[in-house]
Image (cartoon, rainbow, N blue to C red; front, side):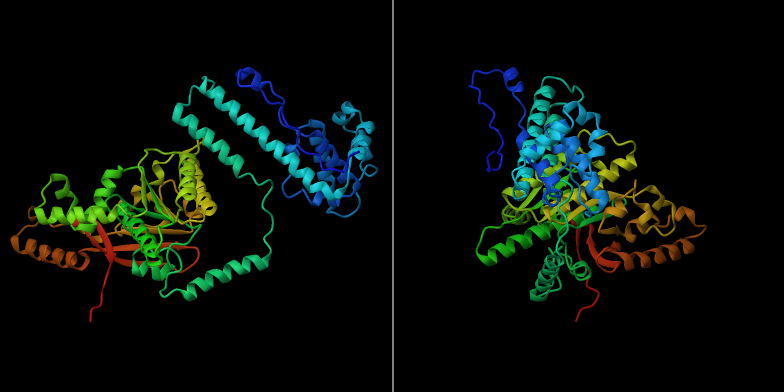
Length: 507
């Protein structure tokens, strides 16, 4: 018996002339010696189980008998709470009652396991070998599915959807961590918390995370924090997209400025998934805001030479920003996740903006029973992206029509359309609201009044109220998991669809 750790047996190579059928008939990657050696080690000393239990499942075994034995041993060890010995003697009754083991040889097969055992020191290495073979078998399966689907096995999926399904399968395999990553020693968690506190202390302002470009919002939240899912909701025409674009632009500008101060190229970027507007429309909005030329005049070509020069100058400056726009309509969660991972790997990723989540589709291959469940899967997926890539994700959301039926039209959490788990999964929920929009619709009509005097009084009162809310907006922070809630007053300039800080005091 060799004292060396069993290693995966190499699969014989085929020459390039071998056809697809020959490739598919290859023996799937497996190492039965490693499986037997691990089982023998566990039955000899249960501490061998502790070294593999955090990542190895019975499903990772290639041999069905070995998988069955590992599951039986696991159940017994877990049930005993690690107390008492679980070995060939204490499990004799279980072994004798197992028809699967009996078909494999019963006691003779168990004796073979004990003979295959080299030592418990190598137990974790055996487990890694078993898991590696399982990963490669999964890759073979995914590759086979890709070939079969391309040949028409799934006629319900077109080409791009098959690509998304394949990416989703590979992503699930790449992120498989066994049972879980396990406990994090408190000292390590404490160090991370101290690092965050140190960043806040060293920072010159009130912002710890990525800036939103809105002073009062950053003061209340400390900026945009990694791993957070923020929901920005509002009724149509409230300015959701304009506000999200403002935040994305400010974040990209901050990344660029920080890189320039260090004399480096920017490492990091902002991704906008615009499911409603095209990339050109979104770019026009940003240009309109920065060049202070209304988007309507830009579309009509109604701009003078000076404005056009300013327009070109601003465009030249903006094209340097690390801002990426994906305007794929009805993008799936799996495709979005893949593109975010790719951008994070190639250029770095600091912020993701999704406009808006009700236009997204869940992961390819999933079939939710209801619209509420579908939205729930999407929000959970967006939160998973935020955690995995450690970036803030801002997802825009529509509100239900019940807002319009109330006298006070300021949104509430219950107004979230297909709310399901939106409120539950989000770290922050905020609503954008403009009283000016609704008040404008209530302008008095002269025909509604019996006399000119009463109409004039009503008109003046309306004008007075309009002056109080003109160019003002509210960002209602209804939920914040890590801080206070409240209303943040903003400035809104409709001509350029531009949000900014609202200065209520001037020296």
